[in-house]
Image (tube, rainbow, N blue to C red; front, side):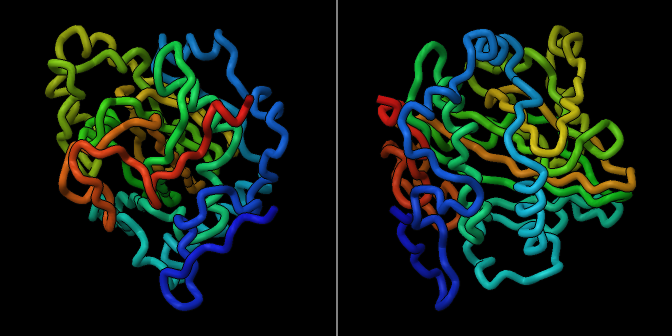
Length: 313
């Protein structure tokens, strides 16, 4: 059965957040429950995630799928104006503010196109996500929000070292996961993503490290608050993701990326999830246009269930 048609944000402008299943535009949805179990990660792979805080080079998308998604990137690089930009949670044509260090960053694009809408529902993502949100337990997965990070050739900017959950403490408990999808080959030369293995154990009184730079500009600022032991362990490793590959990382794993001075662009799509049962810890907007009263469960239009282990039974 075909998925429902999205409701309109404006006349003739669909809001894809009103559809809580894949449209089928990016991939063929799973209809046989046995196919879900085939996508589960091995115990060895899961153990690596909990040991290092990250698993890299996970094949996800074909070159053709990446190219189709990249075609929709035109709405965020200024090439074409999308009439639904008002749906975006955030849009920064250059978050650094420096024309010599451009970082395009946005949130909420899953609402604008069928391809970006379908990406958070990708079975090869949501099944392992259900295994990684809570140690030794498989849980239902809800979508939190998406991000795009684009660094143009020759003058692409940095993304400063950070832990994702430092920005997300308005939702609790910490039961979150990030999936970084490379839409171009990533390397040391074009600003590929780096990780600090085992840094997911770095906390302050049970809380994540504080946010020092909301615009990601000061690459090394995090080092000013690290302990001597943490500094000794600060050994960045470039994931070297190939086009269509992804990295899955813990919400406390420190990661970042250097500038792009190469002749190649570096475009990525980031998917953020949390486990069913996470609640709002704020009466303020969680995302633009979305308020969930403090203490209430995160659910509704903007936080759909993208996978439930019950679907495998």
